[in-house]
Image 1 (cartoon, rainbow, N blue to C red):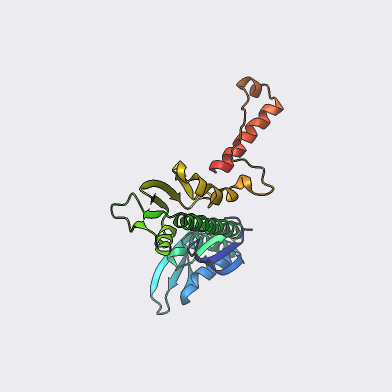
Image 2: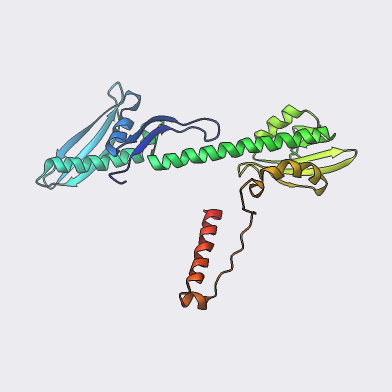
Length: 270
């Protein structure tokens, strides 16, 4: 933990449905450790003992009734500067308090920059979830408009809905599932659709029988990344890697090609 790092103290909530409760931001290590110790009205103090060759410091936490809960300790060699010894020990204790913050209550700690990335991921996930719901709703609505009956989920021993046209209960079930296999039937013919949530949103329809292409493609295709205005991505990248001889020669183009390869791999799997 860098001495210059600033921290966010928060109560973590479900990333999709609820916002985190931010207690404080921009706190130093000492400030966030103090805030953690004092949550829920707890009382804590640091005791010190000098053993000649080393000094022992203990953070003792007590509840409002002065009952001792636990101790976090730090030991430092004795120097001529007792104040500095205490400062070093207190930092070691603070590091432990932050690392063990869940033992003090329901709080969590992240560096401010990491918490900002958490919020970015939350925003992206919510957008993906919203798009998933939009696509699934449109697919179910079109199926019902076309006269299909829906069995959800087809692979279950006892599907909650079999040959059903009850829109709202079907959607409620699908919104709660990560994987759903639908069997749809019309005029004695059956087709199938696989739904997988939790990814990018536009890819929620993972698979379907080809006879449903006329119905599903017009719903999904406008949301594909490579069909967005100004987006030149086409969903695939072709990179020709150089030969070992080109690499050994230090050819700049060969080195650039390798760099591009690892950049793509990092974005795809990282």
